[in-house]
Structure formats: structure tokens, C-alpha cells
Image (cartoon, rainbow, N blue to C red):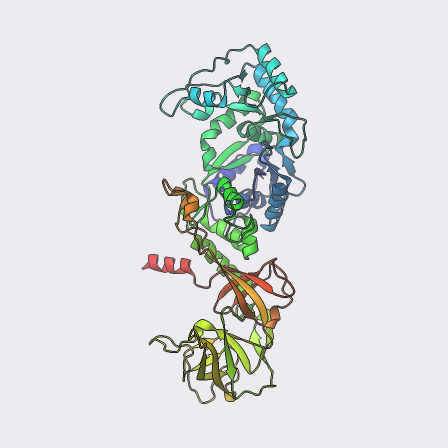
Amino acid sequence: MSLPNVSSPPNFIRNMILEDLKKNKNDGRVHTRFPPEPNGYLHIGHAKSICINFGLAREFDGLCNLRFDDTNPSKEDVEYVESIKDSVRWLGFDWDDRLYYASDYFDQLYDYAIQLIKKGKAFVCDLSPEEIREFRGTLTEPGRNSPYRDRSVEENLDLFQRMRAGEFKEGSRVLRAKIDMGSGNLNMRDPVIYRILKVSHHRTGDKWCIYPMYDFAHGLSDSLEGITHSICTLEFEDHRPLYDWFLDQLGVFHPQQIEFARLNLTYTVMSKRKLLKLVQEGHVHGWDDPRMPTLVGLRRRGYTPEAIRVFCERIGVAKRDSVVDLALLEHCLREDLNLRAPRVMAVLRPLKVVIENYAEDLVEELEAVNNPEDAAMGTRKVPFSRVLYIERDDFMENPPKKFFRLAPGREVRLRYGYYIKCVDLIKDETSGEPVELRCTYDPATRGGWSPDGRKVKATLHWVSAAHALNAEVRLYDRLFTKPDPSEEKDVDFQSLLNPNSVEVLKRCKIEPSVAAAAPGSRFQFERQGYFCVDPDSSNDILVFNRTVQLRDTWAKIMQAEKK
């Protein structure tokens, strides 16, 4: 058979699929799946798995299913289901008509459990959860058989059917596989297959009061859907013998489980349990807080799906766990936004400037470039008037030697505008801080260039005071103070939260061209960074989230390594 033209960088999973195709394994089919649990929102780590599963299916002209592992109704919610579907689509992938749930197979999974009991490969155990852990043994000591392990097939069938009928209390009985309590792999020491959970399910209601465990449901769901390559993260490597055991004992179609290293990112936690704790305890403002590594949080902050997909491709697919620098993700984002984000001028900490020799009733429309990387984005008109705002940090009364911006008696260029010179300074009587600058301008320097060839060393951004829009700007930083908060020994990860992870600026001014910008619109604020319009915006005030700063930390890291 002819192989597809694969242009993406090689990795061991791709190589395995290519070998399977050469051998015409699975009749040349490639069928993957993305199987999230609907007990939280997807995060950047899930994006890697989504890109791998959907991406490989797309490359090899195959199929990828979206299947919810909804086997624990006590922690699941329809809210999570809908959010996961939305995030997968936002990332650029679709499952077409292949949306499935483990709950679709509850009847069949129950029948499979009955088959194992009849084969003498499963038994009902009355040990408590604590006793099961005690009997399980350790990595260096074998486990002990449950005293209920040798129940007859008839007794096990009767007890399991009564478990389904709701006769027994939660935690009083479980169904366990009968494998080997002396196995060196703890997952093979008679693992639990079914437990009693008297909780209503978001899809099946109260039909069931027993629910299958993940290890049992997952592989059999793969089999029922005809999955060829079951791609999992590395923590499931030790579970693969159990995955294979269930399929072999039942004699059903046998997918191949393949494990890869999960994504670990600096200054981030990926545990859904820890992320849920941050939300529930109010450390962040919900799952879509722009400081969160969730896809809804990254989306609200202004990340693009294109940048995330490029990031996932660049970090590659490996067999060993490692930690990726957050700076690389930000670098991918800058590369993408640099090409697509229109430029605007915004002043975050305004300082008033009055141009004394500019007519009070004069307003000029200056032409500004929307994006120097893309001429097709054209230009816009920016109003210029006698009273402006500049950035507070762009002025110093007594500047040090290497400060080239505005100071008393100094001349600078205004972006797209004129040369201005500071001739006077008005201070607050109490604090002594500058509140207004008095300047003059040179009319001959329109467009920012001097006909007599004199040079200035700084170009400042600005907005016209009479035309500026009011804006609130939220400056986001790392959520944690340590690069690897999950690995800090004997330290509560919450104690490592960055108290300065967000700064809210209420008095910002921005040029009027963004007045009609919809939530989610992205811009580069010149000299400031990339920003995104937040859903909290109203007709009275625009709210912007800083997506990422202009300074490229990753580029500096790469330059340093080359040296």
C-alpha cells in the first residue's frame, strides 16, 4: 500500500504507526481517541494529547473519537462536558459524528464483568477499601489473597447481581479481577473492576448504582470503538499489562496502548485536583481566570489556538518526563500575535502633556500603520490634539545617564506625530510627583522626522486626551513564585502562589480605533505587549488582559545557550 505523505517532524509514535501501515496492520486503519474525564476543565497538558490524537488521525487520513470517561458520577458535571467540547473545537479539531461516552457501554461492560466471573477470573470481595490496600502489599513485598477470593462462580454471580440491584451499602463490596497477588506490578494484584456508588449519573440517571473502574472501562471502550492506537500519558505505562489482560481474557478486538510523556510546564500545576482547589478556595476567579493553565483561561488571556498547536509540535513527543520552560509557550504566542495582532497606542499610567504652541481647537488625523508585518492590514487614522497623555515612566525630572526619554529641556519623537520638547513641569503640591508637562512642538517634524536632520534618541507612544477611551488593564504574571511548585518537598503548593500575579490599572487611556472591539480581540499595545479584550468590558469602559509582554525571554535563553 502507498503510505501518506507525512511532513511533520518524526517521533516514536509516528514511527510506530508508519510500521503498522507498512505491515497493513488493522487493515491499514489509523483510529485514535481523546478520552477526557468530565470532572474539570481541560488545561494546556490536555492540549498536547488533543494535538497528538487528532493530529495523527488527520495526518494518516484516519479517524479520532472524542469519548468522555464518565465512570465516576460523584465528580462529573455537564458543565465540564460542554466546556471540553468547546475547547477541543477552539483548538481546531472536530470529532464529526464520533462523540461517545463510556456510559454508552455500561450494559456491555456489565456483561463483560459477568463473563469474567463465569470464567473464574473475577470475584466479589467484602474487604473494606482500607483492608484492600493493606492486603495489596508493597513494591518490595507481595500482596495477600483476599479471604473472599475463592468464592464459587455461582456465589459471585449472585452477589454481583445484588450489587447492581442496590442491596448493599457503598464501600461494602467490590468486584475484583482475579489475577496475581504476587505480581511485581501492583496494578495486577487483583484490581477492583466495579464499585458501588449510589449517585445519579448525568446521562443514565439512577439506572446504575455500580460503576466500572477506569482501567476496566477504558480498554474495553477502545475495543468496542475499533481504536487502533490507544495513546496515553506515561503514568499509564504500568497499567498496560492490565489493559492487555482484560482484552485477552475476553477475546475481543485488541488496540495497542502507547504511552508518551505528559506536558509539565514551569510555574504551573497540571493536577486537576490542585486546579479545582485554587478555584474553590478563591485563589483565582474561576476556571477561566487568565492566570490558569486551563484552555478557557488561556483563551480569555488572549492565547491563540494556532500558537498552542505550534507549541505542542515544537516540544515534540517523548518517552521521558521533562519540564518545558513557560518561556517557550510565550515565544510561540509572540510569533503568532506578531503576525496577526493590529498595533494600537495605549497609555497605562497616564501623564498629561499640554503642547503650548499647538492650537486649542486643532485636531489632526495622523496615519498609523496597523501591522508592519502585514501590509494588507493597512493603516488607520489617529487623532492628535493639544492635550495628550504619555506614559508616566517615559518622563524623569532628573534622568540618569542612559535615560533617553522625555526630561526637562529634552526633545523626543511622538510616534507618527511630531518632535516635542519639555519646557515646564507642574507637580502635585503634596507628593511632589509630576502631574502635567508643558511642551512645545516643531510643526516641521510631522510624521516624526526633522527636515534639518537633527536626531532624537527616543520615540514615545501617546493618545489624544479628548479622544482617548477609558480602559482597565489587568497585568498578569506567573501564578507561582517557583518554577516547579508541584515538586517542592514538604511545602503546600498554595504557599507558593505569587501575591503579585495580577495588577489592575484603572485609569488607562487608549486610542479610539478600538471602540468597537469585541471580547477576544487581540492587539499589540505599542511598546507595552500583547493584550486581549476581556468579556468584562462594557460600553463605559474597555477591559484588557495582558496576554504576554514584548520581551522574549525564550529568545534570550537560546542566544545564551549558543554562546
